[in-house]
Image (cartoon, rainbow, N blue to C red; front, top):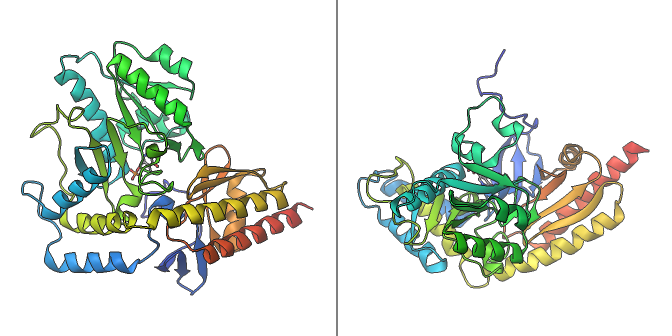
Length: 392
Ligand SMILES: *Cc1c(COP(=O)(O)O)cnc(C)c1O
């Protein structure tokens, strides 16, 4: 018999009722160290006091009005993100997928508004993940994502992470190139700065827009507010979600004034997107992440964690083969099936997240301490030792 919750996830037999910082607690009071942070979402940890305060204060004022009216804290959050990024304007959403939908629509609208309705195609990359709506699965491709859901929305050209392949496919119908600066679901694959630079050039030469999907790698995860800052490349459009709400469902599609030029009143909308409750929390998150010293903390934690992970790979060559990633967006490439490693982690009360290319992802809260990292490494070490013993 089908479960009341649609069984689209093969869920782990774990449930948490309480959290504090990087720790999660089950109903029976067992504590787990959370190195997944709800897939890069809880960037300030669980139940961060600053976010609890922001939520409570806003909950007593007003939760929701509508985008039919001005929303002061939405305007304040947008102004804050404009101040800290390439963007001039943005549309708020409740999820990453909706931010992607907005980006796709904006790119197409930009081209048609500029007199080029024939420019509607978007180039995406093998190993990408852009979400689960009908538009986003067409962008993402892959049998697991699209099987049985056709016919797919037309207009996506997927290529390997190879510049010749990009140049071969970009043409007079190309509206945009869309890429994650670090592929998340695809297995924490860092895209080289030189590759992003070349994409920027190809876009400029061909009248196409560059869309960066920073839903997973953005909001301080790499030690800069947005991952593309490391490359010096700026996009025309950028999607953000996950960390931006610190656990509250919030996303955004950021753009330059030029790229957003077709998006006039009535062209797009959302009932909830950017409502007062969400934006109160978004403002609190942005305040923390842009506070002096926060990014230095991420870089320090990253250096420490990376070093400890390298040690783990050296001690357990039959379990782990490589550390990859940037900042606190890290992964261990596994020798056995990554799902088995995640399970062995659960047995040691440490939470990791599987990813493509047989990795386990480590996406801890950005304010994790060195002592907490050491505790996580000790648990991963114990998990790997248990797997080695079982294989004997
Ligand atoms: C998670 C993710 C999405 C989809 O976001 P949802 O909030 O699950 O809709 C899109 N792109 C990337 C890079 C992601 O990591």
